[in-house]
Image (cartoon, rainbow, N blue to C red; front, side, top):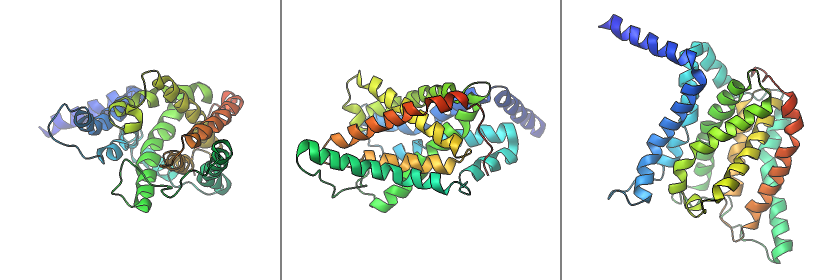
Length: 282
């Protein structure tokens, strides 16, 4: 019985080793969607019971869990350790970390001033950094949850694992576009869950995908310039999410912020075309 169980484990490991990228994608979707489907059933009134909104946060950890599982199966504890080291890689990257942490805040401030000029009044900022989706969470706890679940939960998977996996033998630009497609598809259940996504018309998914595409370009650039530091991209992801989803009285802030990120994303294309290998974290 023990030998049979060992053979099954060994067979599963070999299967993952032969198809690591495909296994990662399937796992990232499966782990996240398993958390989100109860929420989807609740929001669409398919069931009589209520699902916790915090399942959204839990599901966001799916890409990180998938990356760690596949890495452990293919590269063992050494590979997992390398991935975890990248989550704390800050040496020689303080300038980039400062950009990741404060860049979105500066962009938010500029968008606020622009909104004041365009609309003739200051937008309400009394709930800066708060969340409409999880109103019971204190702001500071929400920021930590955002960094852990949306920052690390997604970036360990998308940039820490999938970007370098797709980049083998390809340009960083091609890999980033591939990541954006997988990343967009992963969000599909949320279009029946979160209020902002539910309010979108069907054609809105095109704009949503384009925003993820330019986001994937910016994050790929940060990851590569940051010498494979997951810390850098996780911080940027979290702070950008917090600023763009801040409840306010104008829609101009996310629109203007998105426009600037689009320009920045397009500006990274020449670099990403030339880049082919991500440096090891450290």
